[in-house]
Image (cartoon, rainbow, N blue to C red; front, side, top):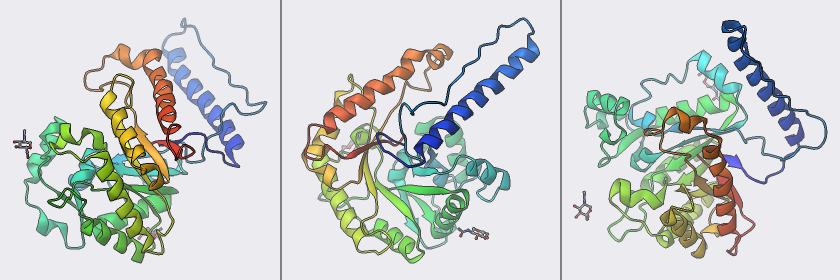
Length: 328
Ligand SMILES: *[C@@H]1O[C@H](CO)[C@@H](O)[C@H](O)[C@H]1NC(C)=O
Ligand SMILES: *[C@@H]1O[C@H](CO)[C@@H](O)[C@H](O)[C@H]1NC(C)=O
């Protein structure tokens, strides 16, 4: 998630570091070429670090996402205590560690031992996770235990990251309003443990119909965010702290449904209940993409158009000065 148009004192320094990093990466990527083919031409990209920086980013500009599907898989391939892993993560800090994704809207918090609550076959889940994404049952909730939550928190604090946790927005009452009980249990627990967390509510709500066969209107989602804001304000650790959203997906010119959702959210004063307006971006469908797709600069330039599009939409509403974040 990248803070767009945010300034920071160490930004100039940061951009120097990025420039050095890029140079290092370029150099490292050249080495194998020169080793294996002595006739290959060598391209050197030189980035001068003199003069004022072209763009200023947040110190958390380089952030990462941990997919919520890891939670339903009980972190089976992710040992949070692994020293090597922690050393590698530490080198990417500071930043946000967003814990979100499609399955964020299928996760519940529990202070009971999650083993007792397991109702599905672990074997099937792993097979599905390694194979087709759709294989994961989308019709049931999964558990994140208090112990796992504390472990994740420990990992982030010790590596210099800040958790961005995406709460389940699809636990709903029969009238369609958000049922906040489980989220509040998690928030209260986190407050009691003095955990510094930035909260989110739901993942890619404009795609709920497609993924979960359930629709949450933008105006309803704004009410739910407002409810979450009031809950957070009840707890000292989160009073006036960040809540970001709505994490709409792929606001491309050809995807009018995604843009309409963002417009609906902002028209219902959604900008007033979030600290930053978030969106997700995809260059192409990774499962169908070819090698050429990954190497074609035009694909990567799509991001510029999407950022401009979102900023253009945001500028039309009352909360036009609100920061925009790319959160995936
Ligand atoms: C994380 O856990 C380790 C081992 O239990 C402990 O030494 C460390 O202080 C913990 N870090 C935080 C931030 O709680
Ligand atoms: C989608 O939801 C509707 C209404 O709840 C239901 O009638 C329909 O069978 C569902 N479709 C699928 C594919 O599950």
